[in-house]
Image 1 (cartoon, rainbow, N blue to C red):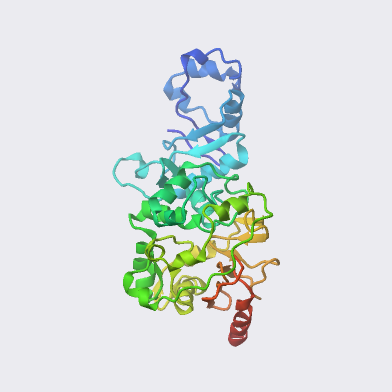
Image 2 (image 1 turned 180 degrees about the vertical axis):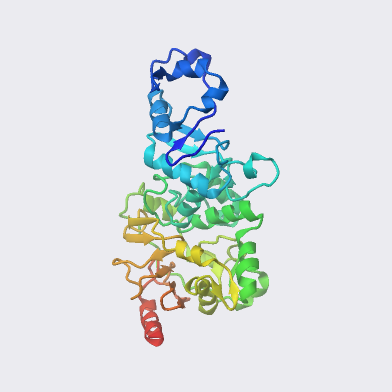
Length: 398
């Protein structure tokens, strides 16, 4: 069985086509022998003793015109954990000149008994932990759709998710952030559905909202309609002078954003989770207190302390490709920085919504702040109306 070392992976077998034997590009030397001849002449048992690093495997692949290699799961240890997948892919990214993907085992230890569900399957491709990070941190390169959409298409989760799965990223995933204003909801929603079998709205309700008694909904039931106050839309986004092929214009114009759509019954019932949560500031602050209180609030633990700290690991920093402003993203939140000094304390995370809403989680102050409004301003990620209440909140907690 191949072994995973710090930088090495043994390859149990090397499959070749008979008509490639004369390929001059396959000439790496291992232990003084021609690797091609050793592959043809050695027994499988001896081949298993031959180790090769991801670096040398990548160099050999590139020499033969191969741009992507896949590490199979029958290694020692078996690749049956997210951490091992992430390890192999990080090593591949850092040390290999070609793309490295990881084919993980579907069962623990390749024994065919206990399945593991920590690798999410989306359109037949395995998305490891790094892919989840990218979806959470707006670095997946899928901030909008290639397929032309109508506003009512947002009511169809399968359509929106499958269209994202079918298209190529607009930039190299993980290399930069680009605000996934609407698409993030469908990416995360599909990940949750594949792992749990539930829609994101149902999972959110059962796991967070109901246990806390939080009056917040993703996919709002009809009985809440009499309590919903329609937003007052802002002036339309003016993108007339922008390059129509820019990432920002493509993100916000397909379909065009229209806040009045939120008045429709279809919008209230659907689960467009990045944009159509319905609640109030009180319910938002209660839910966000899970983060500001280290994963535990109201006497119930929802996240591990280590999981909360993971939110603060920087996933992207630089000019956001959609917003066009300096941004620092952790896992699902913007992070406190010199460009967005949202808090006097270092362990604070935040995000603002179209029209002016804002949430802030401050672990050092054990405080969650939420501001929502009906009269929308022009800002796409908050505006200055929340600054006064936020400053007052910090003054109150000292």
